Image (cartoon, rainbow, N blue to C red; front, side, top):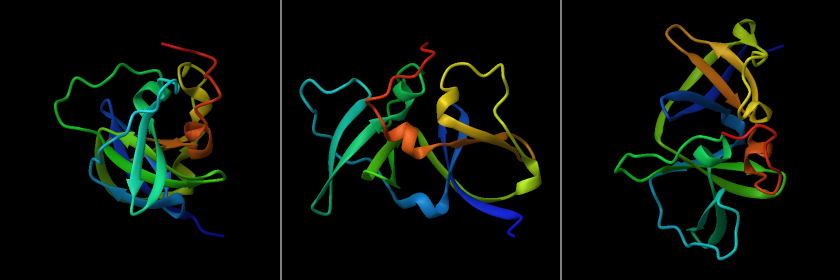
Length: 148
């Protein structure tokens, strides 16, 4: 049984999130987004990924956070879900990190907004790594129970 796991990490609003490396298809710079009329505001748009049309989810909005005031465009973390590839729009890409299973904890009860999207937390040396449930994050049809 493996005691270590690897996560692709990224920042959203100074919070460190991680997705299991096995679920990540690729990480790419900002791509031009095509707006989708009448789509949920959680959908940032569509991107053309080498001929494959991929939905881009505004992860800030999905988590109930305010839109970014940064001038730099979001980055794309393309993940594999049960429904196919989905791009998660994030503020900044970080490193791939190795974590020890013994540092994993369930999300604290005090976490209200976005709780359904967080599988748990790893304690790193200088910060916490929030583990994102990619299937739930990509499902823009299901509203979160606690909004902003």
